[in-house]
Length: 103
Image (cartoon, rainbow, N blue to C red; front, side):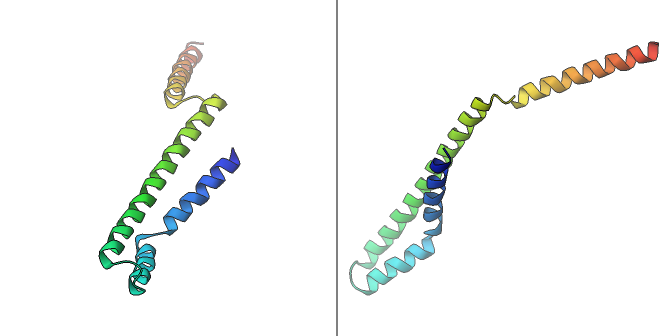
């Protein structure tokens, strides 16, 4: 499972590091060398940035899902269960305090 997260993390870091600025620099170089037109370059930058954003969102979603699965497997109480336990503790504490005062 750790390897899964590590691979995903590295892929995301690669997508993050490929910012619009860096992409633009690479495309500008292709335009200067005459390999693509300026219009093609703009489209390429937009497409690559959009793809990077999609990959980041996909990775975030996958991580959220995996964390949810892991939390379920650990059988940890959720927020509602913890609040319910706090209320029960408060109620019992009050009852003990009242009983102690009556003694």
